Image (tube, rainbow, N blue to C red):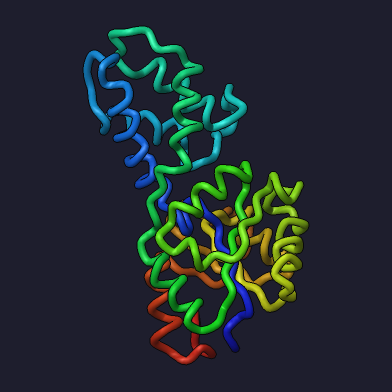
Length: 240
């Protein structure tokens, strides 16, 4: 096996640690709203947000149509307010600060540095609005290494649709079979990339592998392992 020409990454819970990012957002939330809150603190706000955020995926049967609606409703109803704060104001605050309160995943910088040093091109394929994808990438300490960010909004297709993977590969001018895709979600990332023709690498630990679906793909439990194993062993032995 030789190194791929390009490696694409998912954002949330791959290059970005979503819960650590929520902790950063909760600090911003507390700074801006503590005057209106009767009790609690940033930690309580973070707990509410993480429960409503649900790892970035609305649970089945959710009454909300978006994460931002779920989060703003949770903050409105579960925080002990001493002054009235409208849910629209909480939603606007989330939209303003969520993306810029971004914490990199441990090991991401090392993985990106190794790929770049070895001439591998780097991109992002992520579901969500294009503006927030770009804002999150810009906040990463290795943002300059990322050549391309493709969002479901910009592509007109969402993972696991093969179209978004094809579009990203074409934009870099790299054949699909010469691309890897690293992500945490079994369906959207691993199966989606595989069915599109990319080589998927599953970052486990955030979503359970679905029952009834054969796990026949490369797997790592941390991006630190990706960087370390790629640097330390001959490429033909990677992930074996």
